[in-house]
Image (tube, rainbow, N blue to C red):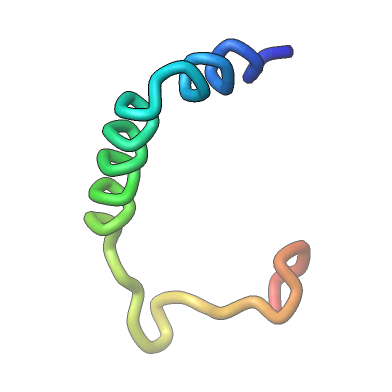
Length: 49
């Protein structure tokens, strides 16, 4: 029920969906990339390696 309005709005307005999607992808691209020992790749997302 909390996302129903959002889904319906995107279903009715494809341009709004693609505009918001583009903004989200740009924001994700601005995230800092962790290198070497700064981060970790988890074998199981629910547990720390």
